[in-house]
Length: 244
Image 1 (tube, rainbow, N blue to C red):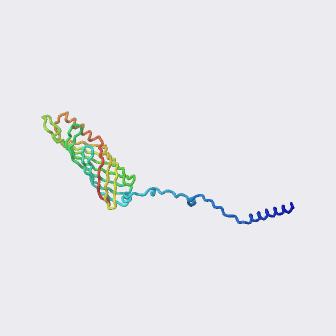
Image 2 (image 1 turned 45 degrees about the vertical axis):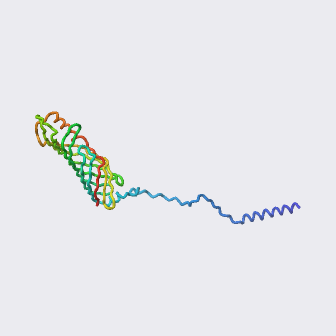
């Protein structure tokens, strides 16, 4: 009886093992994510010219050659309300070169001394370097001339008005920060946020001669020294013109 039970048990185990070994293995699926996984690809090297999208103004500037503009400089040292005219050669979206003429005539008072009527004429050659779409840094030499008519602000020894005329001419260096925009029609407009004109060399010519009171003459001399040596500034200069 024991032998019969042993044989039945051995036979059952053998059939179960054979059935298990002969069944095909089922594939195992491992879900790692709901999103498909793509193989890693090497990142291509960055192109310096494609690091950012070009703005509208610099794209149009890159296709232009010339700009004509007029401007107005109201907030200005000494002689306010200057009118400006300029021509620019556009060398590309990064550089342009500009010749500017500025003029104005006003009565000027320095400190408590009324210096008289001054006409200022200035010629500036600017190199403009654009840092992005519209913002630029400008620098270059300039030539200037002050035509001064004391208009009776000086007195002779008889206490009579003495109209003395002077010419101050010289050279200097100009620096500016500004922005300039352009549209597809060629319309161009801009602002010079800050501009500094630094005088480097000046000649001083007295066009008339005469006997002048010492005190008043010293006041005039001191005022002329300020004109010759102190840098001048302009703020929020506006310009508008056409680019082609």
